[in-house]
Image (cartoon, rainbow, N blue to C red; front, side, top):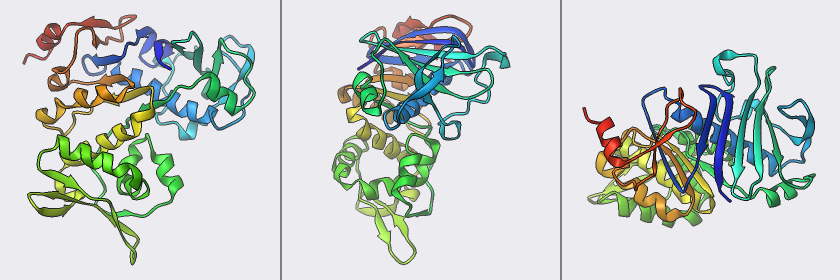
Length: 322
């Protein structure tokens, strides 16, 4: 299941904005042009989908003031703030419409008096979480903003790791994730070894006396704890971790993954993403990342316009000269 179109109405910088999605969508543009705003909507939808797939829907009010079936999404757990969700702090409600390839639509509604509501159109009456999963088998994997790992990481609960997934807090529990997901680790290790020359990585180990997790990487036969391997390698390991988890997704969302990464590593990103299968929505300032793009995959975002424009690689190269 793919999202083919996203329509923004009064959402942050996007007063009226429509984005048509293809298989690979690379968002470029100046700072504060709206790239991260677009991605934030997908992060909210990812969380709202998890809510709808696990809870019974209730009666909600849609953007037209009519009652329908949907979900009130808990604001406290959203992966991005909605305090400034209305364009220029206006008194008009905010709406995002996601059109799927089968013609059905999902809506995120942010009423003027606060809150976040998920509802839908184009399907039969949905009264259970199981029915929602059947009608909307959409799986989104949004990679959170990545940062350096914690030097000390204590063992935490499964629920803590799960709630941090998809949020900036995931970096705090990186070792915990792999401590609990040994079955996926060989695929992750293979990706590390095939993309970072001379480097390997081992499963986390638990120091039972103080409940501390350590994780070692090996370079030129020298072992060192992952924290001392350098920020670039830490970021790359986190990014590969999310890619390993994205094998069953329909859409993978990534925001400026090039931070801390050398251009030689950045150039590998699209080569890794394409074979995974999900559609790709990626925002970047990196000419190295864009060097792997094909025709019509690059979109110039400008929040002052009503839609992005697709660029050629030559046009993008001109943007990044100097």
